[in-house]
Length: 427
Image (cartoon, rainbow, N blue to C red; front, side, top):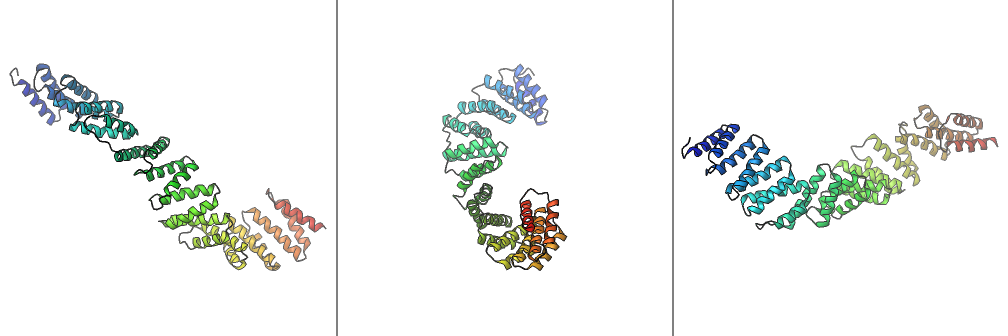
């Protein structure tokens, strides 16, 4: 081996070991080469190949040491560019972003215009996106040699991408700050609607309802954007819960117009119905309930709610026959609160029409059926006493009132109703 070609032989044997995936053997041969022939023209390649062998052996620390040794001994060698880039990549893969940034900066500063510098800038960009520090990358890019261009459009997209990635990683507070900074820097940016959408979602998650209203409102300035339906759902829910019924009604009406699925149309119609009822807009309530009742996928609970609100609206408009039809449908099931009240209202309407026999029959049937809703059952007992007073049966009326007084435990207006009627019966 002590021939002028000995270094070459070591180098070739080392490469063969690498092809055979004997990376430890390759490192041993390369060490012998550099130890025995420190001035060999193959020494720089040997250091680089040793570093690559450690990479294949998943020994990142030794790989970095080998590449750093190459940089220190042969700073002007073309191999140094590769070694410097390898160091940056190894730190990046380890997740040591601070060291990776320093290493990649050296590549760009020492070897401007090279392929390694271009790749270093690509990885630096990815690191700064991961760190959500795009402003720093922009400043870095503009300060680097090699005529690196970082235009406003790219800064726009990267700033948004970093903020979105932060949100997706479950860091909403940091994402909120980043998205707000993005909107301040790029108020009409390519991703401004996306930013408002995520800020609206963060507002929902954090129960920051002013934030929901602000960003859903911004989204609705562009009514045909892909986030409009979700913005309307979020906005209407907040308005409804804050008792801003007129605003909620308008939002639900817009949602109904835009709804792209039957589920969202159903949600909108339900919202319109409830807002109309709470606003005491009877025509609106009747129209909304009728639309809802025409839906194919209506749950029994929603059907009862729609019938109930429509019946109440009909009663307000003196449309007794239409109200009675809805009340009769509801009264078939007194287990739910709508049916419990409806059964009572049917009897009340008969009493008001002086149809006392029919009212008595309805009430006795109700008492026989019973209901878990004690309040409406109690009201029915009181109404039955009114029927008996009207038909000249004060003793029966008094008996029902006394029985109810003894057994009813609710803390509401039932007690006062009983007292006032008993007082009249004693005079």
